[in-house]
Amino acid sequence: MSTWILISLMSSWLGTQSIQGIFSRMPKGQLVMIEYSEQGTMAGYRYYGCVELQKDGSVTVKAQKESYGEIIEKKVKAEVLTELRDIVKGHKMYRYKERYRPFFEVLDGYSWSFTAKFSDGESISSAGYNARPSGEGLKTLMQYMMKLVTDN
Image 1 (cartoon, one colour):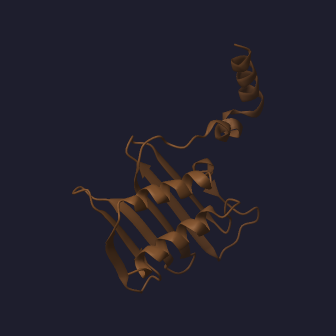
Image 2: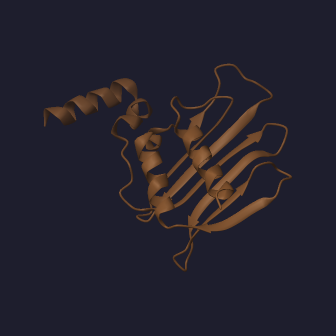
């Protein structure tokens, strides 16, 4: 009972937005889709990658290294979704804020977006421009996805 009183006091004192991330948890469902992209403010994609469970049960990866580059699409092992889920969980990417923005406005640079959807209907979505969450989660995710399309 005292825990709920403390939470109520913190909510009213800090505002609900301030404590929203404290109770973040990894969705329980299996990963069914994950997408990551980086793009220039005034240019197209620097990188785009998506791994998705298809209706027939197969798993595909689509990637494009640059806006005008070739779109690579191929089937991958089903375990890839489990490995990607482990990256999201291991790097606590489910705790990412919805938006990241720099303290000072910058008119040029790069932006990014990350979305993960799960079998239980839950999803994680985060994006930013010229600002990123701390840690290596986004870098690890992009490197893993790039490796999927370069491996034979």
